Length: 265
Image (cartoon, rainbow, N blue to C red; front, side, top):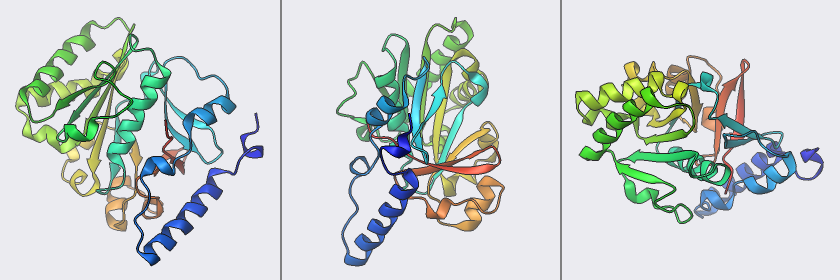
């Protein structure tokens, strides 16, 4: 189905929102919450047709089509989400959680979140059975990582786990057993359908080169400093300073930068 024929392209949507943002800044009005401006995922999925099994939607591309993480295809590897503070890293992870729950049965996909700010993860449409949140500063986080290493070594690929770690630098405050377990999950998790998706503040990311080396798939939100952008992407010309904070991201795809919007569920 030709989505462009039924609604504006996301490029037009982006231009309109940037103009709206500039007007807001000029007259001193705070921008709306992200969910009020994001494209509705369910409307888009109705038009794009059925998705493959074991899929999670993480964005809507400029042509209006959904971008998918296939939980049954390990080649993507662990995913790193990098952006400035306040640019939507937590919103990205929470969108993944909502997408996974909408599109996959509870008995087939578990969703786990590690965070220093568990209160931010009290999502109205995600009951405790659907999303289990662990404070990264408690012993339960270490116990979880150790249990997941056992799960990875014994899983028969009949179930998936989405492991959302909101703040990579939090791993530095855990002991050696937890750090070793997490490194093991980054290396071997996707092959057993355990998917680590990890956020990190752009300024702090530069201080974690050993951990960044685990991630070949990286998604970027707004990064205002051009030098920080170049250091993290190893490429000049990334459009990170022009991304709409809290809603727009980009990924390197087939030798070009592809911008996309978070979907709203």
